[in-house]
Length: 463
Image (cartoon, helix red, strand yellow):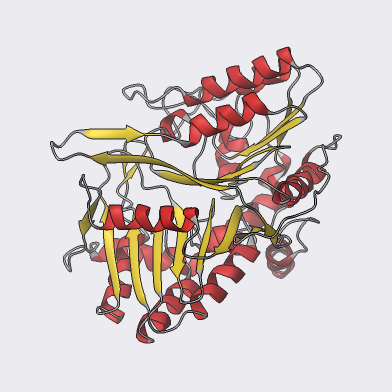
């Protein structure tokens, strides 16, 4: 027993603290760009109570694909058509599959690489029809090797690494698919793998002309989610390629496209690629640098990271005005959720600094407010940090793979005006019922709060 416990503890510590694969937790160079475009997908309830969907991100992705000449690299967490049978969603996945295949057929010399997560095959329980079709048409598909990443659920993963990983087999699923009942059945080994709670959570589209860094997946069941993205031209494309090449290097050894940097012209906008733990570094430093009179806007699916929560409290106590729009965490692909982590975190923040820190809930239906963005209005200029990363331990502590962009610029810059207009429109419900006020009674039952505390303690959670 002593030997087993010693080995178990050793496995836990090693796989929680082991060196990251080369190229992860990247802090890219600061580049100048005159071409930064803000894109948004917004689902909302109009004044007549009808839900309305306005999409810009998919349209931009299709245009990127159409205009590419040399290469297309896509890294996308969710990429499938699976859903519950009684639900209907936009046909996003097949639209992109068709566009990529057509591009490859029309321009056989173009390099197209598609990087994704094993969740799209229910962790090897069945093949993805979409990915298989792309492979058959000459598109390079890379399934991310998640096992080289640090363990985010170490108490379980220690057991999995010692025992379960050696016995798994692909296919032959006999169990219901909890991810989507229209998808094929799942085998027990896939569920055991899923409990490691690991993900390549990035949402990036790169061509030789621009990099799109998004909070949104190309995924039918995510088709009604509200998301944001930034399309950026310039040398940040090279950093985005290097970041994706690092995933390829530990997942599948292939020839990867390169980008030749161009002479940069000074611009009022500075852009910087951030991945994994470097996102947390810049979010925290940006919050801590705020001063009295500055304004912080946050739009977020999940807010739970303790360092960020504490930094927001401190900023509010220093007379920084903070406006936070949160998803109520009550729906996920049409299924009910328990309101965790946002409801207890919101209560904590409001109770700590009610005067300077204000929270609103996004007025969701069966979709999610899937945005992950912070915008700081400072005296000397404004800062945006946005991308795939929620403000949680899994997303910020070098566990999940994540990609964000940091944009710094003058208040007069168009992108800064666009972001300010976006947040003010949602906050003030200009023309529609985008958000709902926070009320003291917005709380979770005691047993759910205890569950939230236990999840924080043992890290057995998806956020």
